[in-house]
Structure formats: C-alpha cells, structure tokens
Image (tube, rainbow, N blue to C red):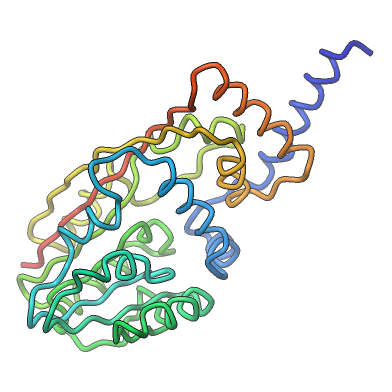
Length: 274
C-alpha cells in the first residue's frame, strides 16, 4: 500500500475516534470526568501560563478587577485549585472575608492546603445550592465555571440570592474564537457552551440590574508541541498513535512559522445586583 494511503487512513481513524467522545460541557458525566481532580485543568493552565502573550497573566488581570475591598465579604464559586488567590498571594485584600467553594470534592481537597496559609476556608458546594444566607456577599467570583452548571438559570438565581443589593458578580468566560486553531487538531465538534462572551449578557440580565463586559487582550504563541498535545488530551483521551499523529502536525506548523499562534477569546462580565 502506498505510504500516503496509510497516512490518510490513519488520520481518518484518529479523527473518527475523537469525535465519539464529544459531549455537552454542562453534562454531569463531563464535569465529573474533567474535574474529578486538578490533573486535566493543570495541563490547560500550563499551556496558557507558558505560551500566553498578554500585558498581564490572566490571574493577575482578573484579580485587579475582582478583588474584594477591605471589609467586604466574598465567595468564589468553582474555585478549582485556588489559583486565583495563590497567584496573587502578594496582594491579598486586607480586612476582607473570603470563602472558596467548588462542587468537586477532589478540587476542593486540592485547594485547601494551597490556600490554608492564606487563611481561606474551602467548602464543597453546588452553585445551585450555596450554603450561605441571602444578601450575605458583597462579591461573588465565578471564573470559567458557569458553563458547567447544569441549570444555569438556577445557578445565577442562587448567586443573586446570596449577593446583597449592589453586590457584584464577576464571571470570566470564553468566546467562540477561543483556542480554535488548536482545537482543530482534535477534529471533534466544538463543545456547546451555555455561557459565553456572545450570550452571557442575555443570561445575566434576567437576574442583575446591570451587566458589563471587558475582554482580556491575549493570544498564544506555542513553541513546543508536547504541551499542546497534553492540552488536547486533557479534554479527550488520546492513545499513543493519536498523540504521535497530532504531535507531528503541530510540530510541522511550529517548524514552518517558529510557533503555532492560537487565539484566546476571554473576557470578564461584571454584573451588579439591583
């Protein structure tokens, strides 16, 4: 058989295998698989931290806008491994009371020892059932997690409940162009997100008096293929042949241009309760 025919058949098989596992990001199985612990998330964060081109790293940019003031009470929903606070350890607010939460016991368990030196408590809590009284929070932070809430409207209603009048929700999310050049190597359908830069405002205005969007100016210049493969494998498990195939295609692009440029389409909604 001609070598080119072998390559074409292998590419088709690789793409067909990957397509089978695409699913809704708010599906309970998807959330449980992706966020059982911090391993998959760490692969994604490494890629962004290593190859991101931006005026500031994303955790610093977000903290400039989201940090509670002295005397305020704040809740982070979907805190993951606590990175927002660990990455800003040198400028934590004085006199603010901050609680972290995540629906995943594994994520909350990883966050606790990382933020314990900062004196931040971590709870296991579903965004739709927050263990706080009404009007308790001045600030709620929900970065890159609202699209995982199975009933987004119920989650936003619960967040609005725990916020005092005039309180702020900060919610970072992605847009339609986010990582599209790299996702193309998976050849899988793009996952449908129920909360994006394009539709987030119409979701928020049902629960908040005002909504504002600010975009984060950034992109990636990837100069090593392996971290990019790890990023893709964090979403869809890849066997050795699939990894080799994708690695080769990405490396070829890096060899041609010096790097693989990938769009980051990230922004922050600020929603104020009436």
